[in-house]
Image (cartoon, rainbow, N blue to C red; front, side, top):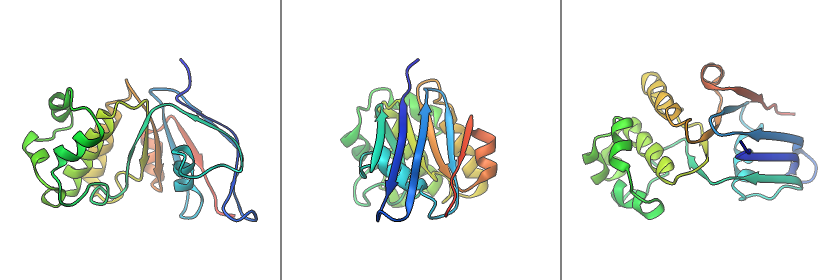
Length: 192
C-alpha cells in the first residue's frame, strides 16, 4: 500500500533564525492514526499549514494524497448564515450522506439548521460528515475535540476512528492521554 503522506527532509523557519522543523520525516498509510503532540508554539499547526500547501518549506518535500480537514472550533469552520447541508453540498457530493449520518448519530433534520442552532458536539459531527464526504485519503484533524466536554470528546473521537478503513488520520492534540488511547504513533514536538 502506498503512503498517503510522505514528508522528507523538511526544513522550515518563519524568520530564517528560529527553525521550526529541521530534517523532519514522516510517512503515513491508510488506516493509521498519527498524533502530533506538543505545547503551544511547537509547530503543530505549522505542520498542517505546510501539508496543505498554505506555507512553503525552506527545504524538503511533502507529498500528500487527497485530504480534508477538521478544525478545533466547529463554529468557525461553518458560515453562520447558511444551513449545514448547503455548506456541505458546496464542497462535497452528498452521495451516501444519509447512511453516514446514521453512523455519526446525526439526525438528518439537524443538517437543515444553521450552525448556531446546534451544540458543539453536533456541529463537530457535521464537520466529520463534511470531511468524510469529501472522500479524502487523509484527514488532518486539528484539536478536533478540545472545544467539547469530556464525554462528547470521547464520542467524537470514537466516531472519527470508525472511518479508518478508508482514511488515515493525522491528529494534532495537546492531550497526551487521548494520543496514547487512539494513535499508532505519537510524534512529540518541543519548543526550543
